[in-house]
Image (tube, rainbow, N blue to C red; front, side):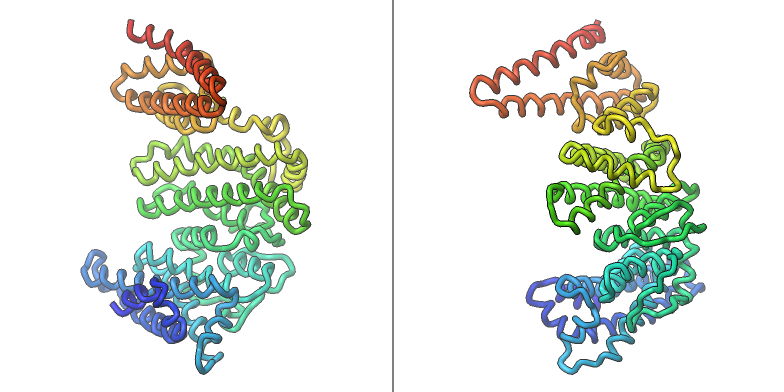
Length: 478
């Protein structure tokens, strides 16, 4: 209750300045409360479904939420947590602040690796860890190395891991060691890094050494996180709650990558050397995703689109849509600056783990990415339910008229499928998506021209749709 009250106070504009003055005391309280709660969660005598254990899990989550809120608000104004806390104190006590942050850091590792803690608490603890590393005040490259070495346990070539007073020089705590071999813990860490670490940090070039934890060659933390998530996505026998978090992490990684590319598109014409270098790294990343990870991502769609767990289905749909967004951003980048294609391709060729043969989309006509995906989906048999859902998701991103002209006829196949009870709902989903997109296109054509020009364009487009719809509809009705 105390943690909840403090969280409410910190969440209001007039309240956080009060919390900020005593943030060192608040974090010290959070560390003590977390330590006491962890002792209870480790008690094996408590039954898994007991009321007492459920209450302890709730307490642990609430305490961590308080710590996360305080740290995130401090980082919003200052890149150095320790300096920000000392500046807020009436009588600065550097030693006390260092011990408090070090304790929060160590206890967060304990929670992430604690099977008795709630999954939500473990995720929040991972977010606290990432904030403590991002807010360490280290240079950007050192923060990227710290995320790779401390959070992902990746070996870095000839680089000394940067440290501050509250981050141990050698991170060999028992809690961290437990996390490194636990897939649930690692997915929590990966999810937190994708959500909280700055793009500038995660794309910073780092000389990582291939290992059992990093089988493919990566040169930045962002790609290394994808490798960790992908290694867990393919595992069978995941608990339902963990399975949802795993696919959510993959969806978020792809969505964040699409956002990164969209941000770079806005500055693609910049003449600033640093901005152009950052954009080149981002576009090279997008190209590697399209080339190296296409089969893996499409494999998730084939295998999990109809997963029995509805939440997993929703996450897989998010994966597909984010993947399409990445392809669209890359196409727009290449149209805006053709040099992006050559730069991205050279970067991909420098990747030792890449196959010597590129896909057609990577070496010829980059703007045909969506066309390639559409062709891949159309090759599937119409008896597969996933085909209808994938085509429906593609409708807002392609020319619907082009889809309707595809042999042997999308409309005819859909209308024939409507006669099958088990498939009718999927066919109706696709037909609804096609009609909705057609209506949007006609509306845009009407609004796009002035006066009679808009009406004429809309009428012509409407006539084309009617001509394509009429034969299969008549055939189905007869």
